[in-house]
Amino acid sequence: MKRYKAGIISLGCSKNLVDSELILGCLKDAGFEITADQQQADVIVVNTCGFITPAKEESINAILEAARDKKEGALLVVSGCLSQRYPQELKESIPEVDLFWGVGRHRELVDSICAKLGMPCGCVYSGKRVLSTPKYSAYLRIADGCDNRCAYCAIPLIRGGRKSLPMEKLVSEAETLAASGVKELTLIAQDTSAYGKELYGEPKLAELLQELCQIDGIHWLRVLYAYPNTVTEKLVDTMLSHKKIVPYIDMPIQHIDPTMLERMNRHGSAEHIRHITRYTREASSDFILRTTVMLGFPGETEAQFRLLYDFLQDEPFDRVGAFTFCPEDNTPAAIMPDQVDEAVANARLDAIMRSQQQISLKLNYKRIGREYEVLVEKITKEGCFGRSYAEAPDVDGVIKLENVPECVKEGDFVKARITQASAYDLKGEYVQ
Image (cartoon, rainbow, N blue to C red):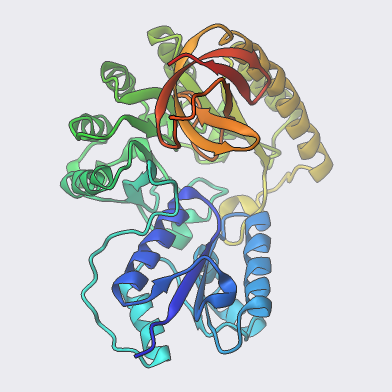
């Protein structure tokens, strides 16, 4: 019997990437050969993002390109958030697609693909992922969906409420990843710091981190997407009490003005954001804080923007991502009065990013002369590149290393001294 080849185009966030890896795992279990060459694939899965307008546009363009470039007779499958959110509209507008699928139910998706190809369905699926990240680094998705219902966000409409995975299942998955060679494990969810609340009655991220610290082979544990109201002193203390947990947390605040937070339906308070930010800084000067802010949310005044701008100056974050408000279908914010002019929102975005560039540059300059453990990620003709604990994969800068011996290979941890710094990237010399 012919062995079919399958490939995937994964779009959007790291949480969607885990879905793509699970789909690839099911395809492999069903007997498909996994290929990165779209021209050779008998099945092409486009796993889409539907979060905001630019992501939707990117997904639609990727679908159209795949339809144009696929080999004759190949099956084109569209899955993910965009397909979950607009199934009928996509079917009507892109008839070249052979199968539309939403989020989750990966085994049923592959069964449907097999049925369309005339292959046997209902194989025994292992539940294992085919990692698309480097073999030494992987994401651990600890929950799906979200209960926060921020006024601007469509994720709960697409993926439903928060569904945390049981702790024992996550520990088992992490052990499997470690046994395969994964050294860096990055914990992700829509709201990582609320992990386990619906299972255990209260957030249990600190306890999960303590369990994961016991796994041999895991060298770094990192936390992304922590919602501020459930980032507590206990969580910060836990992160600083284990050497495997890197002192780095991504905590999107979105705003600091109380009225804006209320209009956004953000849980928690501006007072808590200020408190936990200061507590983290005072607990360790080495702690890396990353955040995300939104500009131009409906009703945002110049004074409210200035309050956010000043807060980021007075309580500087090491990393700041910023974006302008984008009205999303069926969200409360899309029909709120006092929509901010696009040009005004973009000007505020530009002001925030220009300011942050100078803050990041100043903070990076302070790292010159210090030694760091660096995970080597890429060795090319252009040089050797890696990351310290202070740089998260895919979102932060890199460190270019000099005088690295030939025996060093990708995935190794080495020690390096920082010699030069820019706002985003650094240079360092190999120490050992």
